[in-house]
Image (tube, rainbow, N blue to C red):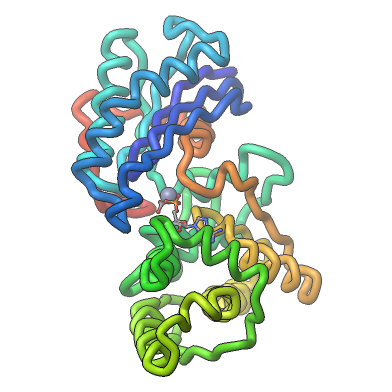
Length: 336
Ligand code: KG4
Ligand code: ZN
């Protein structure tokens, strides 16, 4: 089978569309929303409105740049959740409208499963089973991936996501949203051992990032008492130290998961997988302990429709179609 599928992603603040043919991604059109920057976080109502304004152009661009007419498509795929309800609704409704108008089957995709399946867009592809650490602005999960359509969450955050910890720390230093990439940028010029933060790990494979967020707030407050420009003067060292700390927190859990499962094929996914400290640390661990490590292209780390398209491809082959009355689910979990 050589299905030709249009996939739509609208779970948070990127409107994206992608065309996939016979499992090969033809394009990945992404319109990012800049309207949230001045608020220091995504404003759900504004995100939903921006999706409504952009989705038609983004889908059109995906079709025309791949030289595909809508009538040639075999299915329409969309992100059902998890995500912001108002944002998801725009993509779901647009996909339903197209499927109804063109008399095509619909494919619903779980956004978190799609982050994992982004590893099957390009070579090298991991063989099953493998472990995937999915780290984004909304999630931090350790996933045991048995197959394309069979995955199990074996650890996850009990409070904040790691991306949220990056972004909140960045906000405390007055960086614009999302601050994660800026912390990464400044960290590359700093000393990761300049400052120490308390280790607030919980037992087992679950994560917790609320403690480090508070510790970082007090760290800045205390140091600013002596030097009001502390955050500015020591920006590179602060970013490098915080990043090294957050990376070591997730690396420790990954090592634990490899020990517990006996699986040493390890992948990372999600927006924070773009972090240079995490990528480097994973590569060093691979060289040191013989792990097989899989790191996606930057383009497929943050939210994008190509990952929805590859997930939809495998669902099409398995004949997993959605009905027209499917509704978005803000807290859809892996395995639901
Ligand atoms: O997967 P994603 O695009 O959206 C969600 O589903 O959340 O992830 C966005 C998150 C944000 O928190 C952003 O700050 C973070 O990924 N991020 C990074 C980097 N690039 C993106 N965090 C640290 N270092 C980076 N280079
Ligand atoms: Zn995401």
